[in-house]
Length: 405
View 1 (cartoon, rainbow, N blue to C red):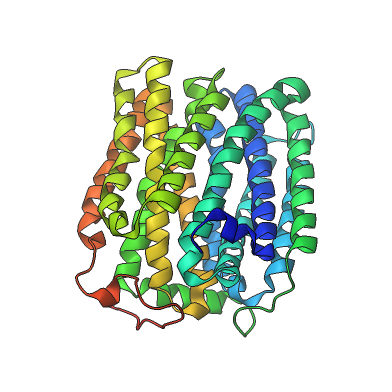
View 2 (spheres, rainbow, N blue to C red):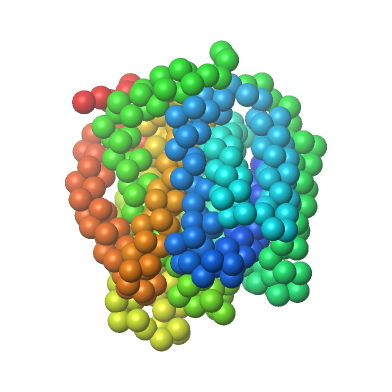
């Protein structure tokens, strides 16, 4: 498979794409509405950032307790059930007079459930498509995320003005319900990828097995930490520019879309390794301009340019799939997704705390500097391996011996 048309000729991929798109639209609209609501009621940059990205912190709980279910549950039932749970939870967030503590308690529960979603979704992607088509398929899902975030933040801003934040949350709940129906009736019925019952013990065994590999550890850390710190910058868009926050989020999504299109569709394999390290640094360096508290047009340009760097995660995910045994694919991708979302929550909390004592612009520059520093520290462990056996270029279906240290 070499083109997007080839992907969409696979009927189940089209359904998976639609289900993922529905979830992205719902989470984008609800996140902006909730961040606006909390900031209006508390005037706290920290609480506003945590309301949008804090639920990601709860994913660490799911990563240590639920991830074995990613390979042990039928994917169609898991996807539709999770979407229905999010519909109910998002509707509950719209209850008038709901205390801030109750809001965060609900967000914690939804965050724990979300930890399973990434493993189910991306594990199913590896079943639906041939191994060599994973990067192309994942780039399409990422691009749909970018497009829907651009549209979602723009529409979310309009909905917040027209319906109020609580009305927008109800609209997001309806989108989650539609997503559940698409998953239920659009995906084929498939058996679980692995045998056995999901359990905390099985999750821990899988996590230990995945973490025992030194190459995988470097990939996981590179996927989690630098990106999470930059999401901390994005978590401050509302206090940095309350009136234009929706536009800044949309511009960030536009940059991410451009990067995914460039790497996923138009970059030859021989160039990917060469671009990986520069892309990882590009994610952070443009945000350093915020130390000067730039005018809005300069800030917007820096945000778009930096967001192109998110495409580095595509290359890291491709390497992760190549380093992972087939029976742990869902678990491995779920651990990536949960760790990524957890670090986004950590990044949002750190950025909000720094902004509380300085300013949003200063905090964004601090987070960018930290992200660039972590990327440089991890660089030696992410250099292209000299041995062809470690490059991820094995034939489809081949099993790679696990590398431990």
